[in-house]
Image (cartoon, rainbow, N blue to C red; front, top):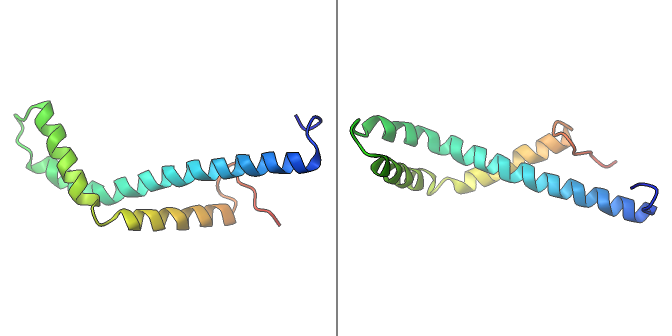
Length: 101
């Protein structure tokens, strides 16, 4: 692949790969932080659920609790994802991300 692409084309392909990988990391971190912020409310809701509740009732209760849990916290998950991605890229901790000098 390197022999068929010129210098500028090779840099553009490498940049596209890096940006795609960073987007994947961002969304993975966003889901992680959103779940982390919702987890205490989900666990508390699970404890209050009656043991004889059906699967549909459990799913409905879980969806309602999750919506209430992350309602005002998605911006925190977004900011935390940006910070974690920036720190990971700066310190070269994320696999596949190379810092340009």
